Length: 345
Image (tube, rainbow, N blue to C red):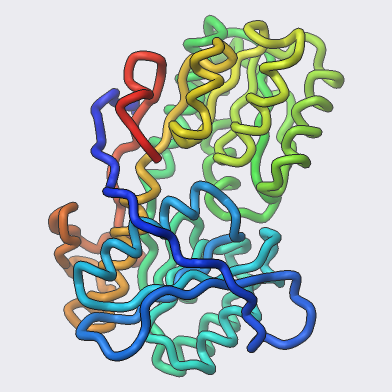
């Protein structure tokens, strides 16, 4: 699947909720949380648990969820750890269950490690929606997928192939080794590259753990390990920005191609200085917006999460639940020098 260059309007910017310590968790989990609206409301209370706080991608998702919650008359809060590990997410899930929150919107750091905690929350009456990165299907009510997994994978390979002339060594700089979405995309990338681009060799997959410095260091290590490296694919917003930062001040700028999944605001300077030709992403604000509306539809019993259920998601229109409780946001957008200034997220 080739990506389109269509413009996807960014959702209006909203003030993000302030990150606060989630002291109710007890112990030293190395995390912090935040809170937004509260009190009685007509709509659902939505608690968002991203992989980690301080990540621009999830900040944008929270902006979208905040707007959605205001539209349907609900409340919103964001909580989460500072580090992207499944163990760090569990205390926040447990606390949410103890507090009896209406819904949890979770980007999972592991497909199975947080399942027990989510099942306990569900048993307590909390509706569980995953977004961005899924759990095993039995651990949640719905998964809000940013785009079709195969489409994401093939588009990443097509972008790097175009930039390196369809031949050469390519490495993948991923997030965490156990990130569900990343691993699915990487497996599909490897299969697609082998079948469609026989002159491209994927020589390595490394992990930056969605940490800027680790991703920066992994980029440096890749260039040292593979002196003939032609390109890097980084399907994570933290990774692609860190890799671009390294390349922009190295001799590899303009010599080693870089693409992946990034936000326009992160990547604008690297497109302008020639470090990056093009990259892709769906609108993370819209992803958070859709996830919040899905949570509200579950809480209000407009839907149950069964295949064929449909619900309205405000400005985004109507959506239908697919197999295994998956709702797909839509196609991502390719960003390059011709359109990057049209976006602000």
